[in-house]
Each structure stands twice: as structure tokens, then as C-alpha cells.
Image (cartoon, helix red, strand yellow):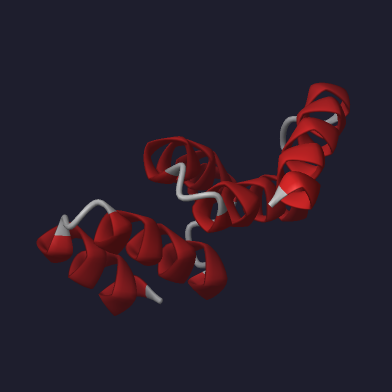
Length: 82
């Protein structure tokens, strides 16, 4: 898990340089999801959705984060969009 913590820090630096880079936001959201930092993951994935509301992978990952919080109705809504 240390590598994911390092990755989050690297993504933070990349986001500072380009806050609208979709893959960086998605990858940071995914790393936070793996670290079980679900609320933070959802916040970052929401930023990615603003950039590309049709990205299925982002909606799916957001659904997994909601499921991790046991917010199953929100998870299902995200999965429906994926």
C-alpha cells in the first residue's frame, strides 16, 4: 500500500500542473479507492466526472467507493451510469 500512498502524492503534483487532466484524476481516485479512502476518492472522481460526464470507468470506480461506504443506492446509481 505504500506505493499507492506514493502514487497519490505524485498525482497531487501532476494535478497542480494540470487540474483538468482526466486520467490523472481518475488514477488518483482509483489509488484512493484501493487505500479505502472512499470519501476522498469520490471527491476526486466527481472532478473527473465534471470533465467527462460520459466516462464509464469513472462512474464505475465512484460506485465502488460508495459501496465501500455501504451507500448502496448511490453505488447502484453510479453503476447504472457506467
